[in-house]
Image (cartoon, rainbow, N blue to C red; front, side, top):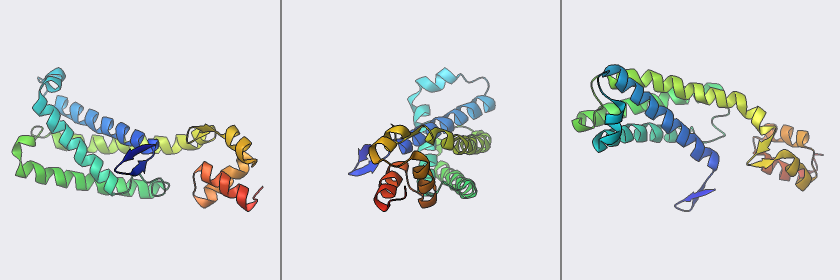
Length: 187
C-alpha cells in the first residue's frame, strides 16, 4: 500500500485515480484537437504552459471525484449512487473550472474546449466505472487484494464460496471476510 501523510492508500484507489486522470486528459486532448484542428498534439506536449493547463483541469476533476467519495469502495458499490455522484462531481468540476478560468484567464485551454470535453469526460468515466462494475465480480473470483482465492482458502480453512457470500453480505473485502468467517465459524 502507498502511504501519504501516514494514511494508507490502497493500490486500487491509486489505479482508479491514474486511469481516470488518463481518461480525463485524453478527453481534453481530443476536444482540443476537434476545436482546433490546425493545432498539433505534439505542440501541446512541448509547451509547458499547455501541460500546466491540462494538469490543472485534470487535478480539479480528480479532486471533485475524490470529494464525492468516488474512490471509496463502499460508496461505489451501487451503480445508481455511482452515476449520481459522478454527475454531481463532474458538474462541480465544470463550475469550479469556469470560476478558475474567469479568475485566471491564462489557464483556459481555448474557446469551446470545455464544452466539448465535459460530455466526453462524463461518458468515458461512467463507461469505465460501469465496465469495472461488470468485470469486478469476474476478477474477484480469481483474485482479491492480489492474493489468489485458493490461497485465502488455504490460509483460513474456509471455503471460498462461503467467504464470497459472507463478503457480499457484510460488504467487506475478501481478506477480512475470510478472517471474520473463520472466527465466527461460518463454515
